[in-house]
Structures are given as C-alpha cells and as structure tokens.
Image (cartoon, rainbow, N blue to C red; front, side, top):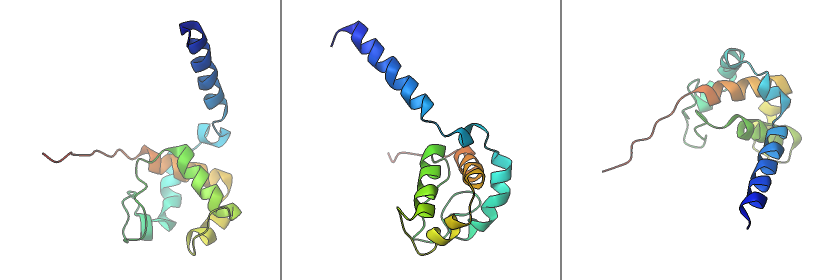
Length: 113
C-alpha cells in the first residue's frame, strides 16, 4: 500500500475509534465507581482481583470492554445467573463509574525466568 494511502487509512481508523468512545467514559467518576464497587466485591473484590474461582479478575481492564460487557448482561445479549441480575439495576452512569474505577487499578505482571 502506498505510504500516503496508509497514513490516510490509519488517520481515518483512529478518528473512527475515537468517535466510538461512549460519552459516559469521558465523564466517568472513578471514586464514585469505588463506592459502587462494594456490590461487586464479593465476587470480583474491591481491588478487582476475583475472590471466587468462577469470577474473572477485572482490575486494570479496559473501560470500554467493561462497559460493553455490563451492557451485554443488562440487555440479555450475554447471560449469567448473577451478573444478569446485577446489571439490570445499573444505569449507564453506574457502569461508566464502575468501569473507571476498575480500569484505574494498576496491574503488573512478572514473567517466569
């Protein structure tokens, strides 16, 4: 592909991706999310590290991903006996705040020798 065409393509893709960001992420409140995360701590932990074997770790996860999953549970597109019920009670603002909180947690990984 020609370098100029490639640059235009990448610029267009970046603009498209930026415009796809949910507006609620831009105004999300991580501290409010921390308070709301108390209902999540039994399974996912307030720190985002799962407390039970069947729950995923969500600390440091991408905000867009977390919101997308919560909305999928709320709409019924994705189902789980607990998460579907919990997500039904969450507003878009709640989801954005929770996602901001869990995304703000810094995770590090150590590779084995």
